[in-house]
Image 1: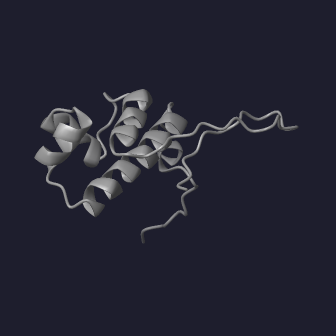
Image 2 (image 1 turned 180 degrees about the vertical axis):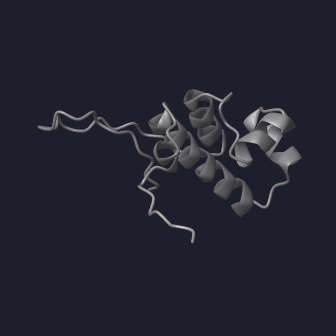
Length: 106
């Protein structure tokens, strides 16, 4: 019999990735980029021109293979897609655990 275990909020953490927070952030940014490209009904070639990415890099990004693409490059892609990107630093927390980074769509 196969047992099923419920995962947490971060699949990369569940898989034991040492950079789980970064990978989740990149996945969230990639999802936003993918959604905008789809909404514009662009081909990858059309999106590459706007994003200034090679087709192989864009294909990797859209298929969840974004280890070679920095968060900064992904933020740049979003601005090239006509989106404003705001970075908001929250108030100090009373917890001893590390803070978190997340993507929130306006």
